[in-house]
Structure formats: structure tokens, C-alpha cells
Image 1 (spheres, rainbow, N blue to C red):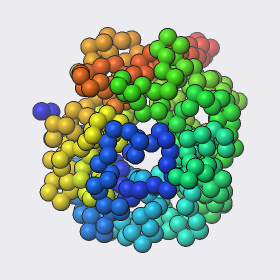
Image 2 (tube, one colour):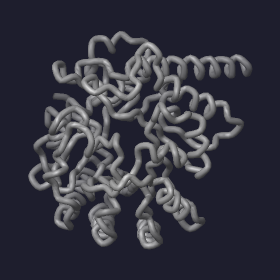
Image 3 (tube, rainbow, N blue to C red):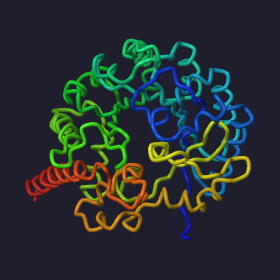
Image 4 (cartoon, rainbow, N blue to C red):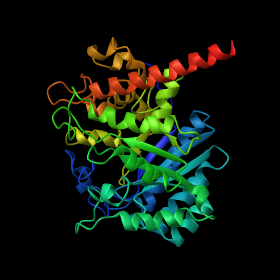
Length: 383
């Protein structure tokens, strides 16, 4: 087995539950139910061991910078004292070894001045999940009593956008819903002046295709391309859109390390609230235990995890990791075969094209052709 690149990012499940009940949630609404058997929140003991393992990995590989993303469920349900303990022990263990960029991915409904004070003191950036305006967001992102979440998210965003907090605003994460008009969604997100936006395709497999799945009409490509055109032709850049930026970079010959685009290896692991080491959360849509590795931070270091066959297979980029149908595709260097979870079939595992293959082909081809033509025209004008 070839030596693996080190991990540089850890997604940490500090809390298992969530105060929302989004109907597309890959943690609670899909195939995997392992969250039922894990601690509700990460204990200080587990947090201490996690910090030691990250620092150990950073020293072993001479990493100057690492990333930690606090995740859930809803991570703020872990409570301020537990989060503060984790932040402090990460700083203590990594002091003199590596800088640590820490972020939290939240639904923002629980943000308050105490949280923002803690995040300012420790330099924690905040990403917020939001699917658009009130109607668009509340179609799926509701509380368990059926009440929409948009008003509470808006209050959290108003707090995050105050002058003293604005530097911590990392951006917005939006799941594509074909029932929502793409430009309306984009404009509603832009109203919050986010430094970045990312669009996610609904997690799906060949066994459970996404809503409106239609390889002939490619509705997801069309939705995203409508937003791309608005973003790409704007007279000034109003925000970054990671999916589009990654595809533009790849189209112009760059290399992008991403789970959903390009052919590079992924460089992150998930650590659950009990200290178990898992693969990408998206794999929870495939089957029970779809993200499990059987490893944990008390028994195994992260180099051991990197050598584990399940981890090595899941993070491996390159053409060799893809189905035969993908290897000869003209846009495979851009789409990278799509997200690994989206390739899954119960009978053939991951040896398939993505369930979004037709959409990805149209999306990547159109973006590639557009930016390459513009680059050629620009070069021609100065030659």
C-alpha cells in the first residue's frame, strides 16, 4: 500500500442530537442509525484524547497548520463549557506545533452573545446552514414540532453579522432543492453578505435517487448553471462559491483537494462523540455502518487510520479509484466521479458512476467550456 498523505482536517461530532428535524438529513433520515448508540455529547476525556492525537499527527508529519470543524447534530447542543474545554485543550496540545483553524458548522438557531464571546476569544469561525428565504428554507429545515427555522436562523445571522463578530462569519451552506427558484435562493443568500456560499447536492444513491432525478433533463445541472451564470457574470464578485471556484480552477489546470470534485485524495477524518474514527458523513446514506472503520482514538493513532483499508479506499483519489465508465470520460478530471457516497449501489458497492453523473457531466462541461473560452480570449487580446 502506498504511503498516505497526512490528514489535515478533523470533523468532530461534539453533539449527536439536533434541535431541527430536516427531512433530508443524512444523519437521522437515511440508512445509518449508529447515532442512537453514541454519547449525546463528547466528554472532556474524549476531547483531551482527540487533542493529543491531532497534535501527535501534526508533529509526526511536521504540519504547520491543521483544521478542526465542530459538527453534529447541532454542535452548540454540546453546551458552552464542553466546547470551551475542547478549544482550550486543542490550543494547549498544539501550542508550538501547529496553528489550528477552528470552525463550527451550525444551524445558528442557538447562537447568542455568550457563544459569540467564546468564539471571538478563540478565533472560531461560524458556518451557517440555510437553504434560502423563509419559504425555501422552511420547506425542509423545520423543528420537530413542524415550525420553520428561518426566523431563528435569521436572528443568529444578525448577531453573527454585527461589526464585532463579522470577521468570524465563514459563510452559508445551502442544499439544492429543485422546488426553489435558483436565482431567488442565491439572492436571498447574498442578502446576508456571506464571504462564501457552498451548494450541496442532496445526498442520494442509486438505490435511493434524489428528488426529481432525471438523467435526460439534468435538472440539478440546470439549477446550478443558472446560479453559476449569475455569479460568474456579476460586475463584481459578491461572494465566493466553492463548487464553482473549484471547477473553474480545475478547468484551468489547477488541482483541488475536495471530496466532491477533482481527483486528489481527501485529507480529513470524522471523529464521533465517543472517539470512534469514521469516514465522511455522506457515507451514512449508503447503509448501516456505512462510515464506520472499527477504529477509535483511544486505541489507534491517525497514521494507523490512514493505513486501514476502508480509510485508504474511501480517501483515495485518481482514476484507479473510479468505475470503468468514468475513467474514459472527458470531464472526469473535473467531477472526479462525484461524491463517493453518490456512487453506491447495494449490489456493486461504489464501482459505479455517480447517481448525478448526467448532471455532473453537463455542469462540468458547460463551466469548463465557458472559462476556457474566456481565458483563451483574454490571452488572445494581450498577445
